[in-house]
Image (tube, rainbow, N blue to C red; front, side, top):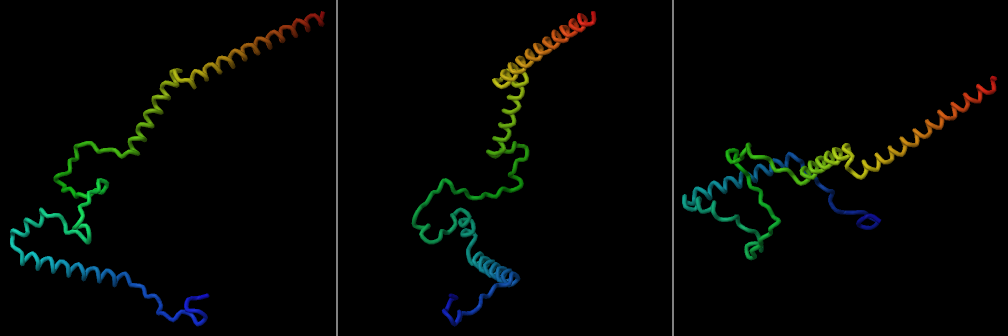
Length: 158
């Protein structure tokens, strides 16, 4: 059953804000804050200005009453272009390090495998030796059968 029973819903329809309207309101709010900040700086002396940089930001609600230290919370620190050292090596992420280690381990394994030092390579070589021996035996038997056949053909022609 629809909202409001059989007669239907009597409330107003939803109104959606226009994106341009939202942008205009945001700009007006920023300008208002900037104007208030500029007026506050004009009224305060130069001493207040230097001390405001040293003080932490004003805390909201209960945060001012309780000291909380969250070791997992990392504040974003912006670096100036002059502070950034381009010559120092870039730190790799965990995934990148693991990927590089994986590739190196694979290369080491392939090198050992080609030298025949891994268990799999030893098993492969043993299997190949067995197959080679079987093929040699089969070739020897074929030769013997062929020779016997030739001998029998020579006897039957006489």
